Length: 171
Length: 425
Image (cartoon, rainbow over all chains, first blue to last red; front, top):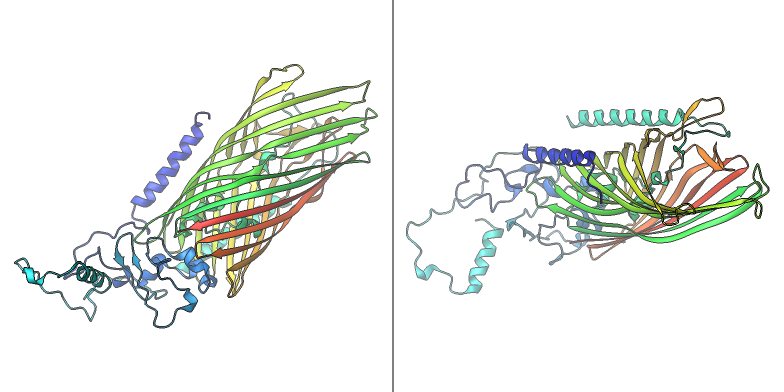
């Protein structure tokens, strides 16, 4: 193949520049949550879901309208709109139209091991500053001494159960 | 605020439509008279401009995909559509071409046909995990332009009793592309792609006249195509029912390096052509009603800006200059129906793609041509999804065009079948 023409090099430059500027200049798309002060208690940004702090978190990834409403009750819904880094695409999946009112989306974002909201409210109007929910109970202060041996889980099984519980529910 | 933004977008779309329609209206063709050209600047028809489109879902909708696109073929139609992809996608497409050309020359009809099946698309899209918005990278191989064509003509000429002419082209233009797109706001996605062009173009030509007392000439040309292009796109999503897409395709700058063999050079002589195809501007709108998606695209290209060793121009008998190519506006219409309770989608579409080349070659000279039936196609298609992850789409398109000059008529009918498979995980 021939040497890239000067036009090609210019195109590559413009392309890289546009992409870099948009990604580095604080545009809407963010790869990581902005670093802010730590939240009190057990909350941390590494474990929280968007919806805990942001009303409109539903359209961060699951935007019904953007994918045309007509996908909502079709097998194509997941094909188009479920991010791959959410973990329940095949595992235990049930067709959306067959889900009963008691359906609990137990999905997790495998990629970052973060919880996701069980509800998917549509729309929303604003981004709120992080706040403490009414039912929030602060975690007990960390003991200054290491826990006694007797308080450790007795088996691997019970240890795993505790981990799952911590990820799904934070209190 | 959103309404104001949308209003401005609609105004821009309207302006684009007006410019495109005015472009249609001012097209001028020379009459069916011989035209003349400078030595070594033969005003040949460049088949590289006939770009069909890619992907079975798109082609089932007449190619109206600038606003609809939400799979890896976005790299081709509108790179901003990549931002719609949420799962890692691998796509593969095949196309089958079945063309038939009827040439009627001074009452003698001859028919030639081409049938070929090619790999048409291999694409990979990788959505980068985001906390908010979307960032998707795409890689693709496309073969949007087929150079496979046969031409066969026989009959009396203006100066002699008999002439036989045949030309066989084989090859295609391929694009090796990288693209990226991101959400710039909840409802606006931006994207770009960069493509290296490649491919081959082989030609066999033979002409024989006045058998026994006349003569004959032949040549064979084997060439490789290299080049570069790129595109930028934008997608505006208005909830809950539609999208507007805009895309700009940068000029395709190509170098065609070949070796030509004929009686004078049986061992071959090197040839080199440099061709730059101009900008193309596309705009599309798509919206849903119940279980339907409707889409309309316009794609404007001022082909008179083709640079083939300079502008491609000719003179008529009164030394008036004409551009050999004129601007054109493709119109693509499509609809898709999602069958309730079945994992099936049905599609139909229409593609109007006017022929921008104004001349025809016959009787050993170039003449202005009349377009009897301009190039258009009807399309149908269907798609199915299996196990939430595997999609299969097929499309069929049929159409062609007819033109004439100086007792010669060319009637080209073209059929295409597209088959695409996509896997998302």
